[in-house]
Image (cartoon, rainbow, N blue to C red; front, side, top):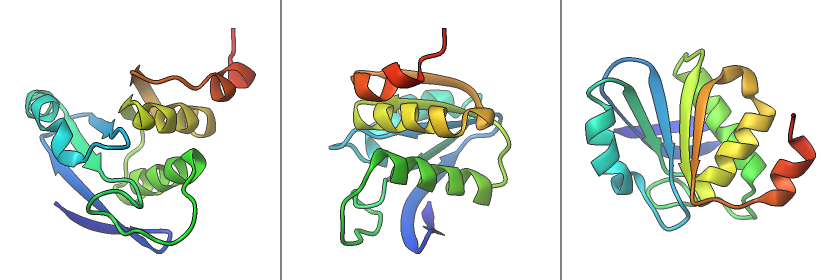
Length: 130
């Protein structure tokens, strides 16, 4: 548990377990604690990483608007600072929209994604590859 500075903003994050890294991305009204039931199971096999987005719960709240692209870029910097090469990414609701944005921008870093309770056709349709 702690803070890491990403692009001048202190983001709160937690890690538990060992193995391949799995990031769990919060919905808008969720915090890292919202993932404890899932992370307690996943951390038996994976390195689970949770973080509050900028402007959310325990992370710093800089002035201005927040975008999915900004959160995806923060996640990219977090992945790089933790010296990870490939990650699994699970996002729900707002976190699912960040997951989709991250997948479009940084697909080479992904082993897998899982998106739950998310809807963002404007983001997906122009980038859909068949």
